[in-house]
Image 1 (cartoon, rainbow, N blue to C red):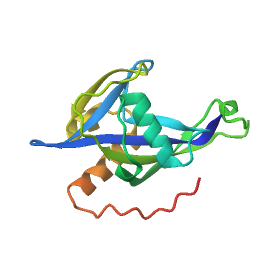
Image 2 (tube, helix red, strand yellow; image 1 turned 120 degrees about the horizontal axis):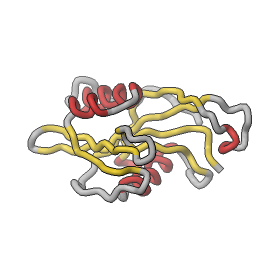
Image 3 (spheres, one colour; image 1 turned 30 degrees about the vertical axis):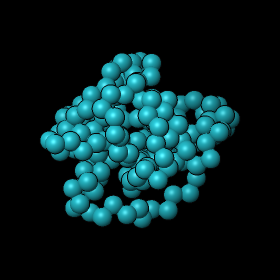
Length: 157
């Protein structure tokens, strides 16, 4: 059974040219996004969802302590509430995260047709959704140490 939330995770790495961000092109809808997915009944918390989605979508294993929580959050309309066994669900929260990926080559799932490691500016131009862009801008400020990046929102799921 699906859990009533979504996660959005930005894979990134530091290179000699600065930070690069991994964007994925959806195969079915033909747009660019971060690693994105919903909670499943086997997930014990949000971090478990992030770790599972990273493994499923880009073939990367990470430890829970390597997952950075971001403050960006949005709400997404859900037009199939019975996936969650609740016909009253209309909106789901989407929580954002980031993870430093060591590998340059990743193995994308069939959900995506291609991936690219890109700069912040290229990502801003290619990403479809404002929530993806907002999370990128927040992460960029943290990585450049313009803000401390401490997580101040107490998300309850």
